[in-house]
Image: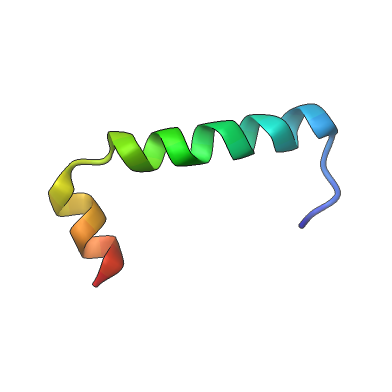
Length: 33
């Protein structure tokens, strides 16, 4: 992983999964395919 401030890294780890859950089924399907 890139050398980023702990604050930024923790933010990304927390936001990434939340954004995935927020994506509509169609978007997540397109990414999976």
